[in-house]
Amino acid sequence: MAELTVTVDRDACCGVGRCAMTAPEVFAQRDADGTVELLESQPPPRLHEDVLLCAELCPCSAISVHRS
Ligand code: SF4
Image 1 (tube, protein in one colour):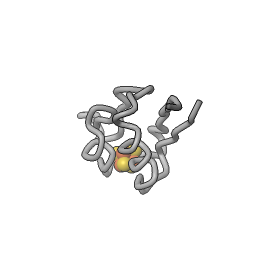
Image 2: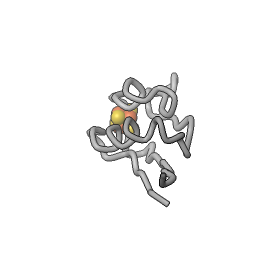
Image 3: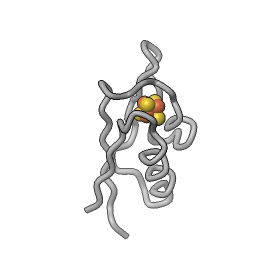
Image 4: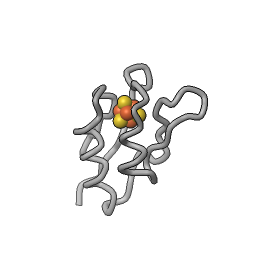
């Protein structure tokens, strides 16, 4: 299965937290300002579907996913 590499753009993040609710093993929200914190840049295959959903649903397009 292809690897996924995740990146986040904290400047674009509007702190909605949808990602942290959908994939809490990969994304968290920083206590300071609620913006996204990336916990796992190369999530295991069992989380790929959730990560792709997060990128699709992020209202600020702050999550990018690259396949390799
Ligand atoms: S879903 Fe998008 S806007 Fe919301 S916290 Fe995650 S990265 Fe930020």
